[in-house]
Image (cartoon, rainbow, N blue to C red; front, side, top):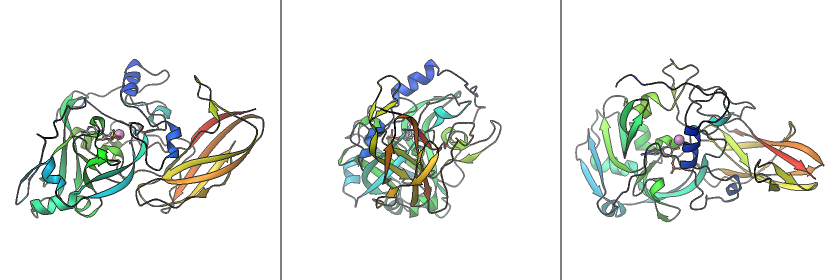
Length: 357
Ligand SMILES: Nc1nc2c(c(=O)[nH]1)N[C@H]1C(S)=C(S)[C@@H](COP(=O)(O)O)O[C@H]1N2
Ligand SMILES: [Mo]
């Protein structure tokens, strides 16, 4: 691979390039946390290059490389195979980047690059079984149909998974989202869904699954999506979603500042918490830095966010609300963004400014 062209970190005002990225790739409005499954059109989107105009009738998924029986499957053929639905919360690995100083020049997410969907499709393990992975195959590379240039290198968006993960976990090749065919921006007609992992693993516009016997060195695998403390580090891959939580901002917003306006008295707070590693065991609700226990709802499944509630006796004045989740592995959200050079994995607590009247 040619040397990658670095981009300089940004301090201060958002740039025109960041604005353009943010206008193309929208977040989930926080009020949509109220739904177990994010309503159509409100699921966040992240598209690196252009959305391909795909013809579902002509689409083929190839399964090839180190397999005994290469496959070329039409959408119809895939839809005749046994299928299942997985409810999964997906979060962009760059979510929270806009709060890190200095920030990496990329999509300047605030906190809302997260959503939940019911994904329906064929288990990846079943396809790999039909193709017959050769013993030498150690990784599967998932190739998207979208192409572009990043840091000077032209490539198709592609990511890999270790064989054990691809064969054993609840990874699916999905053609439906919330009971409807995939929308163009979400990967129509076919995408991978890797529950519990940051979104980059769930390759959209999936047209080829290639079995290989060496670590995949594509741009989006070997260079992007790695946690680094300094630019020259090779870094640690972004994988499972870190423990995180959000609340529906209470009251009504001021249009321009989004500051919340709430009447004094009892306020019911609702939010969601999620982690790609372990079930959520605790959520704390904070008012001006004083924490109390929130009540957890039953988790709707292994991979989906769970609801939490708290009651706030709002007193007149200016306040800051926050929430902080802990998962069963003991991981808890930090108060400040963990430093990352690429702006990945910021799961610091949300802070909501409220004026009580
Ligand atoms: N082919 C392809 N797949 C992709 C991407 C992409 O740009 N191209 N973006 C990835 C990233 S970074 C994320 S966060 C998720 C976003 O999925 P969504 O837009 O359906 O929410 O898709 C992933 N899959
Ligand atoms: Mo992402």
